[in-house]
Length: 299
Image 1 (cartoon, helix red, strand yellow):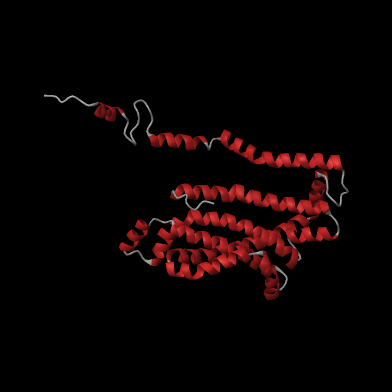
Image 2 (cartoon, helix red, strand yellow):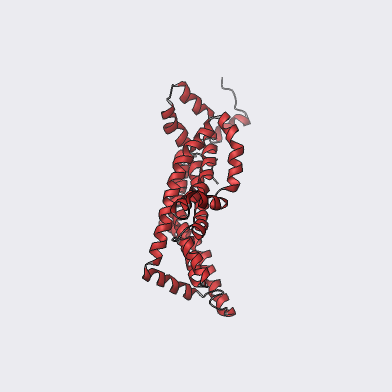
């Protein structure tokens, strides 16, 4: 004898179960893949680039109009054409490449030292509650003083030149990377850490195969933030403690009222940072987060 079905049983049968496709539809995983693929099409990338460049183009238009209407003296604020002319002169004389090469070399050395020192320290802090409790007050205190505030001390310790500037870049980046590496390790699921320890994983394998990959999304975010701090520290240190570099060129132009060269140097610094962030750091952060599937450390 067949038992008649109640309305509740009939509704449960008709409703699709989670994770099962509706009749005639695609599985949920395939639908997600199609949406992700759509954001990587050439048209989508072109629209994204257009949205990125539009505010910059508007800024140039406002600059052109305001200077044309107010007509300030060149030493107060130059027209766009004056800045382009200054850039051309710096290019043709080779001065641009000398200053650019000095700044990029100092930035690269300082950033490499900051990554090599901050990454192990941050992971150690994240994996040890005792170390974290001991160093956290010092870390927070140092974050407020990182970078520019150390320039007078750096010139006393290292004199005027490359070493003082590299120290400032390292100092500006070190604490941002350390702090984010510590947060990244704390976001690793406890079950994963316990499972690795219960299997007798050595400390070296624990670092390379569990802690570092787990903290990587947050580390990349810290690297992105730290490089921004590093650029600011680089320019400030080159103004005070160097005789070459983009910061030095900017300061020298101020002494001779060459406002067009000042604005040209500022444009170069800004464009360099935008290219680095847009072409290297942002894609690296996106791929790292997608690869490891953790979004908690994103800034």
